[in-house]
Image (cartoon, rainbow, N blue to C red; front, top):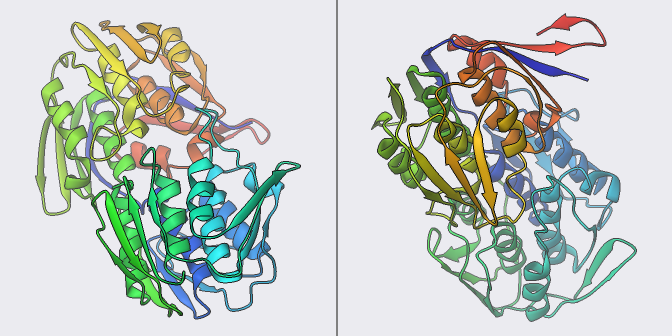
Length: 428
């Protein structure tokens, strides 16, 4: 099993380039099912989740060129003109929750979908009831049995849908269901994330008629047909935020290029309050960190609030800041699994319900730790950069789901980090 070994204490310096956003790429890949014409996708990150989703599309009969996926920077050609299946099987869906995103486009295109109940990171229940209730309002019938949800409708009809919670994947699925539905669809209390705006703009480039991107009310005028398009995925704001915090954890002076600073307004505000110097110009974020950071309280919120996907990384900074801070997790009910691993490095953290009470310590000491989910793995990398001595992180398959070449990018910034492959006794 591969692991990462970090010798902490090196300050970071240099420039790092942000990859395409995984959380934008996955719904956009799903949206290719809506058209019978060829679609080209650019700026796709080379990640395990992307590879799994491409395999899922191929399982449905979609032609993907090159067939083995893509290399970083190369375009992907997708032809969904001959979909041969409406079923997303368990062996693929269990590996990644985002596979549920095929539900909406399959319903819109075929009027039928059978999707295994999703898996993914063990950070909370994340039910799909909002997806199903929305499809039901659009005229679909569904049943859940033997670990699968099966949904049918002759043709979906426009509806007025109010989401009890601004679910990101729920909003995305219902957008994709609505674009080919008969009549108009309104989604209220919709999620507002930049990745949803990217999906909407891509669909509009294909001939969809969607208004309200970036707001909590989306209005969709159904159309009969969507054309092909060529689309480039937006930069990954979570990756950018992680590297900002890496500079805070290790100390240093770095430039982050191909980043959209306004997608990180809430995070940057908190990081500045903690003492990081952050300057933004065009697509460059310049981060400087000197001295000990200050404690800052934090609550995760739906966008444009502080993202839950940066909570674990921010906790690393607070665990070494001066003073006492409280981090409250409002999105997922089980997203403090990284706390026990941070405690192994010397962090002083106490969990009370949905809040973590953190007393900053002056140093971390390296130790063996294990990643429990995607963002927890990034958190442990940052902690290892900040620790004295050696930190070994196992279960790093989680990291590969969402960060492209993280150890290589950090090495280019001066970090002492290697990937160890024990089966071959080699380092990468």
